[in-house]
Length: 277
Image 1: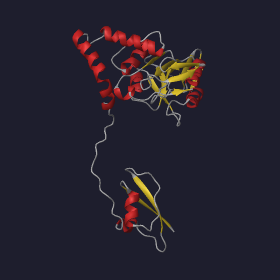
Image 2: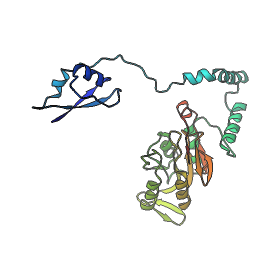
Image 3: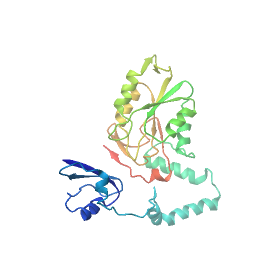
Image 4: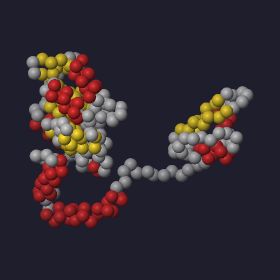
Protein backbone atom coordinates (compact mmCIF):
# COMPACT_ATOMS: atom_id res chain seq x y z
CA UNK A 1 0.00 0.00 0.00
CA UNK A 2 0.99 3.65 -0.33
CA UNK A 3 0.91 6.07 2.57
CA UNK A 4 1.13 9.87 2.43
CA UNK A 5 3.09 11.64 5.13
CA UNK A 6 3.05 15.43 5.32
CA UNK A 7 5.85 17.38 7.01
CA UNK A 8 5.95 21.11 7.63
CA UNK A 9 9.58 22.23 7.65
CA UNK A 10 12.61 22.98 5.49
CA UNK A 11 15.09 20.41 4.20
CA UNK A 12 12.61 17.55 4.54
CA UNK A 13 14.24 15.36 1.92
CA UNK A 14 17.66 15.52 3.57
CA UNK A 15 16.20 14.81 6.99
CA UNK A 16 14.22 11.85 5.75
CA UNK A 17 17.20 10.43 3.83
CA UNK A 18 19.45 10.59 6.90
CA UNK A 19 16.94 8.93 9.24
CA UNK A 20 15.22 6.58 6.78
CA UNK A 21 17.61 5.67 3.93
CA UNK A 22 15.20 2.93 2.88
CA UNK A 23 12.56 5.50 1.82
CA UNK A 24 12.47 6.89 -1.74
CA UNK A 25 13.75 10.41 -2.44
CA UNK A 26 11.33 13.32 -2.43
CA UNK A 27 11.70 15.30 -5.64
CA UNK A 28 9.84 18.45 -4.59
CA UNK A 29 11.43 21.86 -3.99
CA UNK A 30 12.95 22.70 -0.62
CA UNK A 31 11.23 25.68 0.97
CA UNK A 32 9.14 26.42 4.01
CA UNK A 33 5.71 24.90 3.66
CA UNK A 34 3.93 21.58 3.50
CA UNK A 35 5.72 18.64 1.94
CA UNK A 36 4.18 15.32 1.04
CA UNK A 37 6.45 12.28 1.09
CA UNK A 38 5.13 9.14 -0.59
CA UNK A 39 6.38 5.92 1.01
CA UNK A 40 5.78 2.30 0.19
CA UNK A 41 4.63 0.53 3.31
CA UNK A 42 3.91 -3.17 3.54
CA UNK A 43 1.62 -4.72 6.08
CA UNK A 44 -0.59 -2.68 8.38
CA UNK A 45 -1.11 1.08 7.81
CA UNK A 46 1.15 3.17 10.03
CA UNK A 47 0.01 6.28 11.79
CA UNK A 48 1.74 9.51 10.80
CA UNK A 49 2.78 10.04 14.42
CA UNK A 50 4.58 6.70 14.27
CA UNK A 51 6.70 7.85 11.33
CA UNK A 52 7.27 11.26 12.89
CA UNK A 53 9.04 9.61 15.83
CA UNK A 54 11.53 8.08 13.42
CA UNK A 55 12.40 11.30 11.57
CA UNK A 56 13.86 14.24 13.49
CA UNK A 57 13.47 17.38 11.39
CA UNK A 58 16.00 20.24 11.61
CA UNK A 59 15.25 23.48 13.45
CA UNK A 60 15.82 26.88 11.87
CA UNK A 61 16.24 30.37 13.25
CA UNK A 62 13.63 32.97 12.43
CA UNK A 63 14.68 35.21 9.54
CA UNK A 64 13.17 38.60 8.65
CA UNK A 65 12.45 38.89 4.91
CA UNK A 66 11.48 42.45 3.87
CA UNK A 67 8.43 42.88 1.66
CA UNK A 68 10.38 45.32 -0.50
CA UNK A 69 14.09 46.14 -0.45
CA UNK A 70 15.26 49.01 -2.65
CA UNK A 71 18.63 49.52 -1.01
CA UNK A 72 20.65 48.24 -3.97
CA UNK A 73 18.74 50.47 -6.38
CA UNK A 74 19.20 53.45 -4.07
CA UNK A 75 22.96 52.89 -3.81
CA UNK A 76 23.26 53.19 -7.58
CA UNK A 77 21.11 56.34 -7.76
CA UNK A 78 21.82 57.98 -4.40
CA UNK A 79 23.85 60.94 -5.72
CA UNK A 80 21.36 62.24 -8.34
CA UNK A 81 18.41 61.60 -5.98
CA UNK A 82 20.03 63.64 -3.21
CA UNK A 83 20.89 66.41 -5.68
CA UNK A 84 17.24 66.69 -6.72
CA UNK A 85 16.04 66.70 -3.11
CA UNK A 86 18.56 69.42 -2.24
CA UNK A 87 17.24 71.57 -5.10
CA UNK A 88 13.69 71.28 -3.75
CA UNK A 89 14.77 72.22 -0.23
CA UNK A 90 16.88 75.11 -1.52
CA UNK A 91 14.00 76.54 -3.55
CA UNK A 92 11.41 75.90 -0.79
CA UNK A 93 8.75 75.09 -3.41
CA UNK A 94 7.28 71.96 -1.83
CA UNK A 95 3.86 72.19 -3.53
CA UNK A 96 3.58 72.52 -7.33
CA UNK A 97 6.52 74.64 -8.51
CA UNK A 98 9.07 73.92 -11.26
CA UNK A 99 9.76 70.33 -10.23
CA UNK A 100 6.07 69.44 -10.53
CA UNK A 101 5.89 71.06 -13.95
CA UNK A 102 9.05 69.24 -15.04
CA UNK A 103 7.52 65.92 -13.98
CA UNK A 104 4.35 66.61 -15.97
CA UNK A 105 6.39 67.47 -19.06
CA UNK A 106 8.54 64.35 -18.61
CA UNK A 107 5.46 62.11 -18.36
CA UNK A 108 4.00 63.68 -21.52
CA UNK A 109 7.23 62.99 -23.39
CA UNK A 110 7.66 59.46 -21.99
CA UNK A 111 4.07 58.37 -22.71
CA UNK A 112 3.62 60.39 -25.93
CA UNK A 113 0.56 62.01 -24.35
CA UNK A 114 -0.59 65.60 -24.94
CA UNK A 115 -1.37 66.37 -21.28
CA UNK A 116 -0.33 65.25 -17.79
CA UNK A 117 -1.41 66.69 -14.45
CA UNK A 118 0.34 65.92 -11.18
CA UNK A 119 -1.79 65.32 -8.07
CA UNK A 120 -1.06 63.97 -4.61
CA UNK A 121 -1.69 60.26 -5.29
CA UNK A 122 -3.11 57.72 -7.72
CA UNK A 123 -6.25 57.65 -5.60
CA UNK A 124 -6.76 61.40 -6.00
CA UNK A 125 -6.03 61.08 -9.71
CA UNK A 126 -8.93 58.64 -10.20
CA UNK A 127 -11.17 60.74 -7.98
CA UNK A 128 -10.40 63.86 -10.05
CA UNK A 129 -11.13 61.98 -13.29
CA UNK A 130 -14.50 60.72 -12.06
CA UNK A 131 -15.46 64.20 -10.86
CA UNK A 132 -14.37 65.76 -14.17
CA UNK A 133 -16.56 63.31 -16.10
CA UNK A 134 -19.51 64.21 -13.88
CA UNK A 135 -19.96 60.68 -12.56
CA UNK A 136 -21.98 60.60 -9.34
CA UNK A 137 -25.18 59.41 -7.68
CA UNK A 138 -27.34 57.18 -9.83
CA UNK A 139 -24.36 56.17 -11.97
CA UNK A 140 -22.35 52.95 -12.03
CA UNK A 141 -18.78 52.18 -13.09
CA UNK A 142 -17.54 48.73 -14.12
CA UNK A 143 -14.11 47.67 -12.89
CA UNK A 144 -11.98 44.64 -12.07
CA UNK A 145 -12.75 42.41 -9.12
CA UNK A 146 -9.02 42.22 -8.41
CA UNK A 147 -7.37 45.56 -7.64
CA UNK A 148 -6.23 47.85 -4.84
CA UNK A 149 -9.28 48.95 -2.86
CA UNK A 150 -8.95 52.59 -3.97
CA UNK A 151 -10.25 51.74 -7.45
CA UNK A 152 -13.69 50.89 -6.08
CA UNK A 153 -13.47 53.35 -3.18
CA UNK A 154 -13.12 56.35 -5.50
CA UNK A 155 -16.18 55.25 -7.45
CA UNK A 156 -18.16 54.96 -4.22
CA UNK A 157 -16.79 58.26 -2.92
CA UNK A 158 -18.38 60.25 -5.77
CA UNK A 159 -21.69 58.50 -5.04
CA UNK A 160 -21.60 56.01 -7.91
CA UNK A 161 -21.83 52.22 -7.64
CA UNK A 162 -18.79 50.02 -8.42
CA UNK A 163 -19.71 46.97 -10.51
CA UNK A 164 -17.17 44.16 -10.33
CA UNK A 165 -16.36 41.96 -13.30
CA UNK A 166 -14.22 38.83 -13.01
CA UNK A 167 -10.62 38.53 -14.14
CA UNK A 168 -8.83 36.43 -16.72
CA UNK A 169 -7.09 33.69 -14.68
CA UNK A 170 -4.05 33.73 -16.98
CA UNK A 171 -3.32 37.47 -16.57
CA UNK A 172 -5.27 38.49 -13.42
CA UNK A 173 -6.56 41.46 -15.43
CA UNK A 174 -10.14 42.31 -16.36
CA UNK A 175 -11.67 39.57 -18.52
CA UNK A 176 -13.18 40.97 -21.77
CA UNK A 177 -15.49 37.97 -22.08
CA UNK A 178 -16.78 38.49 -18.51
CA UNK A 179 -17.23 42.20 -19.27
CA UNK A 180 -19.19 41.45 -22.43
CA UNK A 181 -21.32 38.86 -20.61
CA UNK A 182 -22.13 41.31 -17.82
CA UNK A 183 -23.19 44.09 -20.20
CA UNK A 184 -25.17 41.68 -22.36
CA UNK A 185 -27.00 39.81 -19.58
CA UNK A 186 -27.09 42.09 -16.53
CA UNK A 187 -27.72 45.37 -18.33
CA UNK A 188 -30.02 46.73 -21.01
CA UNK A 189 -29.76 49.64 -23.41
CA UNK A 190 -32.40 52.35 -23.29
CA UNK A 191 -32.00 55.18 -25.76
CA UNK A 192 -28.30 56.12 -25.41
CA UNK A 193 -27.86 54.77 -21.85
CA UNK A 194 -26.81 51.39 -20.44
CA UNK A 195 -29.00 50.51 -17.43
CA UNK A 196 -28.27 47.88 -14.76
CA UNK A 197 -31.41 45.74 -14.67
CA UNK A 198 -31.39 45.07 -10.92
CA UNK A 199 -30.75 48.60 -9.67
CA UNK A 200 -31.60 50.97 -12.50
CA UNK A 201 -28.17 52.63 -12.24
CA UNK A 202 -26.72 54.12 -15.43
CA UNK A 203 -23.39 52.58 -16.43
CA UNK A 204 -21.08 55.47 -17.33
CA UNK A 205 -17.58 54.05 -17.57
CA UNK A 206 -15.24 51.05 -17.53
CA UNK A 207 -12.04 51.10 -15.45
CA UNK A 208 -9.69 48.33 -16.66
CA UNK A 209 -6.81 47.79 -14.21
CA UNK A 210 -3.32 47.01 -15.54
CA UNK A 211 -1.68 44.85 -12.87
CA UNK A 212 1.97 44.00 -12.23
CA UNK A 213 3.21 45.90 -15.31
CA UNK A 214 0.96 43.94 -17.70
CA UNK A 215 -1.72 45.70 -19.73
CA UNK A 216 -5.25 44.39 -20.06
CA UNK A 217 -6.56 43.15 -23.41
CA UNK A 218 -7.19 46.75 -24.43
CA UNK A 219 -8.32 46.05 -27.99
CA UNK A 220 -11.22 43.99 -26.67
CA UNK A 221 -12.05 46.35 -23.78
CA UNK A 222 -11.95 49.35 -26.11
CA UNK A 223 -14.21 47.62 -28.64
CA UNK A 224 -16.77 46.87 -25.91
CA UNK A 225 -16.61 50.42 -24.55
CA UNK A 226 -17.23 51.80 -28.04
CA UNK A 227 -20.10 49.38 -28.62
CA UNK A 228 -21.87 50.52 -25.43
CA UNK A 229 -20.64 54.14 -25.63
CA UNK A 230 -18.90 54.03 -22.24
CA UNK A 231 -15.92 56.06 -21.07
CA UNK A 232 -12.72 54.03 -20.67
CA UNK A 233 -10.52 55.10 -17.74
CA UNK A 234 -7.21 53.24 -17.43
CA UNK A 235 -6.03 52.37 -13.94
CA UNK A 236 -2.33 52.21 -14.80
CA UNK A 237 -1.13 52.76 -11.23
CA UNK A 238 0.99 49.60 -11.44
CA UNK A 239 1.95 49.85 -15.10
CA UNK A 240 3.86 53.02 -15.93
CA UNK A 241 6.14 52.14 -18.83
CA UNK A 242 4.12 49.09 -19.92
CA UNK A 243 3.36 48.89 -23.63
CA UNK A 244 0.57 47.34 -25.67
CA UNK A 245 0.01 46.94 -29.41
CA UNK A 246 -3.22 48.91 -29.63
CA UNK A 247 -4.93 49.37 -33.00
CA UNK A 248 -1.73 48.27 -34.76
CA UNK A 249 0.38 50.82 -32.86
CA UNK A 250 2.50 50.34 -29.75
CA UNK A 251 0.95 52.50 -27.04
CA UNK A 252 1.92 53.22 -23.45
CA UNK A 253 -0.32 52.19 -20.57
CA UNK A 254 -2.58 55.06 -19.60
CA UNK A 255 -2.85 56.49 -23.13
CA UNK A 256 -5.40 54.16 -24.76
CA UNK A 257 -8.58 55.32 -23.03
CA UNK A 258 -10.21 58.69 -22.61
CA UNK A 259 -7.81 59.17 -19.70
CA UNK A 260 -5.53 57.18 -17.41
CA UNK A 261 -3.54 57.60 -14.23
CA UNK A 262 -0.32 56.41 -12.59
CA UNK A 263 1.00 56.02 -9.07
CA UNK A 264 4.55 56.71 -7.91
CA UNK A 265 4.49 54.81 -4.64
CA UNK A 266 7.69 52.75 -4.54
CA UNK A 267 6.35 49.16 -4.82
CA UNK A 268 4.52 50.05 -8.01
CA UNK A 269 7.25 51.89 -9.88
CA UNK A 270 9.79 49.18 -8.96
CA UNK A 271 7.83 46.50 -10.85
CA UNK A 272 9.12 45.48 -14.28
CA UNK A 273 6.76 46.57 -17.08
CA UNK A 274 6.00 44.12 -19.86
CA UNK A 275 5.10 44.56 -23.49
CA UNK A 276 2.04 42.68 -24.76
CA UNK A 277 1.99 42.32 -28.53
